Length: 151
Image (cartoon, rainbow, N blue to C red; front, side, top):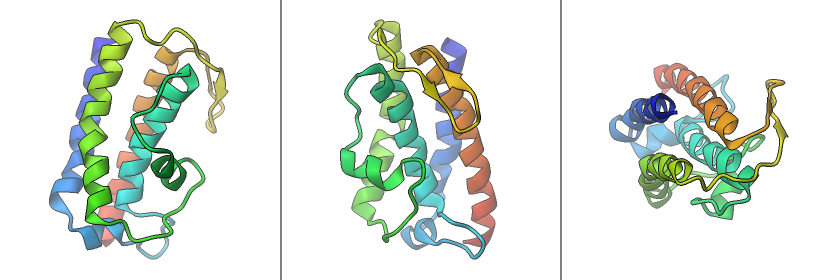
C-alpha cells in the first residue's frame, strides 16, 4: 500500500500545479464545451477521496458538508469560488492524503459500506476505495490538462 499512497501524493503534486500556476479567474473559468472548471475538479478530487474512503468507512470526513454538496459526483459549478474557498481546498489537499495513510497504518478502516462506482466496479473495502481513488484522481487530472488549454 505504500506505493499507492506515494502514487496518490504524486498525483496531488501534479494537480497542485493548478493552484500554483493559475489565477482565481482562470480556476473559475468554464470553457465553452466543458461543464466544469479547474477548481471544481480540484475540489472534486478532495471530496471524492473523503467520501469513498472515510464516509463509506463510517469515519468523520475532513471536508465540510457544504464543500461535499458543492463538489460531489453529479454537482456542477454554480458559483464563483472565492480565494478563501480555494485556500480551504488547497490546505486539505495534501494533509488529507497524509491522514489517510496514517489512518490506514493505524487500522482505523474497520468497517466499509459496499459501493458500486459509476464505472461498474464495486468497492468492498477501504483498501479498494483507496486504490480506486488513485484511478479517479488520474481521470480528473486528465480533464484538467484538457481544460488548461482553454483558460
